[in-house]
Image (cartoon, rainbow, N blue to C red; front, side, top):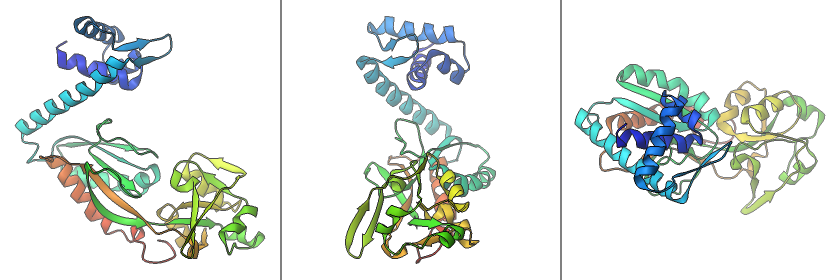
Length: 306
């Protein structure tokens, strides 16, 4: 292997935290991975990975070397893409990330249209309910819900969503509708822990912020699970308005305590700042901004579906 290939192998081992997993990712044999890392460590003269019977971890030197590898290989990829004209013509591999439900409901249905327009692009969609580090994980474009704090990124606002409290009509037939957030202390609550936006229940009582902590009888790790349980009439949940727009529209869920909601959260399409933005990124960002910006369920025009 040349040094660039060795760097790719080392990055795979570090990110997968294992030699076998790295081999599967790179489609090479585990012995080849082991030999490549051993050759690197011998040439450099220091241990890059700490090995146990179960796990592989970076040493301090390995962490620094990993960062250098990412930078060097990133610059190499940029140079090759520039030479191939990818800054003019959309081509190559494009990775996008979005929250799970948002990705399933809004992003995934659009991907095939984009691919049909740009047949030289290959897309990978990472749908996870966590804030992905774009630089560390090789992300080209991200959908962010909430306020942004990274000045190293360009952002285009495409909509807004509300944090809503809702339950099925059947639940409200058995229990009184809460008129104030404090009344939720006696409600049957199903809470999603997938995002801090949902597990930390905050409200506005007039001009005064109101933060409430609950001891819910049921906690789930997926937003869709909380929504499904609420639709069954078991209890009240808190979700983002886009996640239940369809359920509110067809009457299977009702939103309450609207007068106590926090201001709407912005939705942005985000990409890394760079002197040269590849055509695949430019076109995909423009495509998403146009399609998502036109979606009425992503506009907070008042109470209701949101």
